[in-house]
Amino acid sequence: MTDASLRGASVESLFADAGALLDGHFLLTSGRHAGRYLEKFFVLQHPRYGVELCRRFAEVLAPSMPTMVVGPTTGGVILSFETARQLGGSVRAAFAEPAPAGGRELRRGWTIGPTERVVLVDDILTTGASLVETVEAVRAAGVEPVAAAVMVDRSGDPVDLGCPLHSLGRIEIPSWEADACELCAAGVPLRKPGSS
Ligand SMILES: [Zn+2]
Image 1: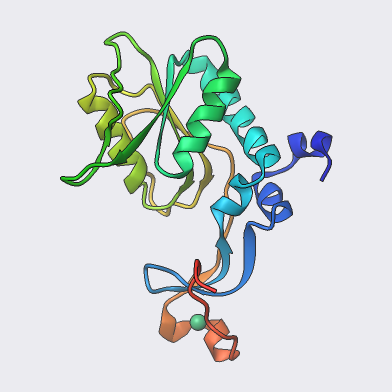
Image 2: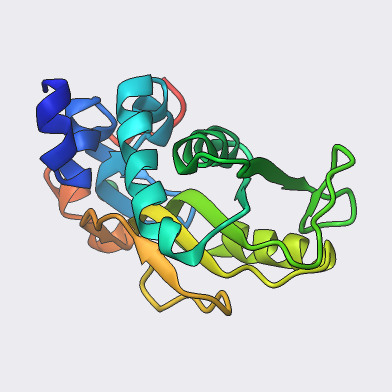
């Protein structure tokens, strides 16, 4: 895909072009079996795709007039930095890390001023747990996030973050309970993603 065609491409075709949308027979952490799998770091390992996705984040988040972009580790480290860079001016980037007592927190000595406008970014929204924890980390630092954006919304039920949530796209992934899996019935070998 040329740099010019990246701009008009759907999120699904960006993932496919980056080799980040894998076809096969996958065991998900939920125990379900799926026919496709998103390997999000396959898209983030290529700066050109990451830059394009963060350009879209900056576009949807700019109307919220952010002063700071925060994302959950690990993908959010990359996404918050590049989104803040594209928003320009003095917009800062930070990330929310797992806290020893559970949930997430802003570490590294970072603070948020009481009048700051914080927006959140994340890669794939499934249960929304990492974004909800990031909302709580920002609240604990003293402000309410004003908006959030994700590359791909894979959630079944709407996730309530207490602020508007923008999604750059949806990617449908068929999945089944193990005992009703069409791919098992067809004898396709099962793979656990992330292992070879
Ligand atoms: Zn199966």
